[in-house]
Image (cartoon, rainbow, N blue to C red; front, side, top):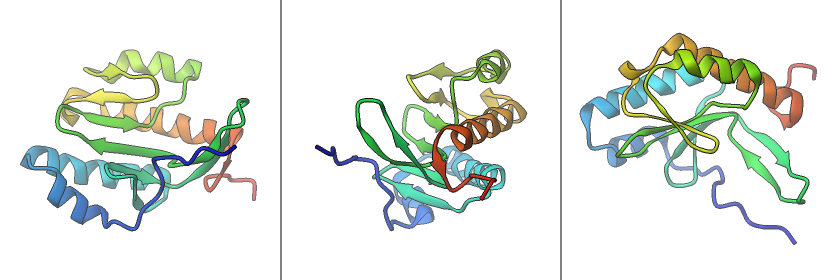
Length: 147
């Protein structure tokens, strides 16, 4: 039994999505800033995942339950109340870095921020790179460096 993942890569243009979905000018500008940062840190072009997530790169995961699928290596969504940042892997280094990140809320697997000026971008970069390394080590991914 395979469950169909709701969040899969789509052909929607990322720029069109931001221009039509984000109605706040500051959030729009910060969305483009995040795209540039995550693209630089990951080495991958942005791609839409599902209706509202902008992802960078892809990896394949498989859980002990048998559930498996593909997900972006890094990503974010410019939702109205806050940005949802998908840049976190639960490692000891990451947990320590969260103390230096700034003003955020933590979800199960994502970091919520209201605006980029609330956080330390250097710490966000470190969290992103730790997450890339974690995914590279634990999953089949396009970020794998030993190919």
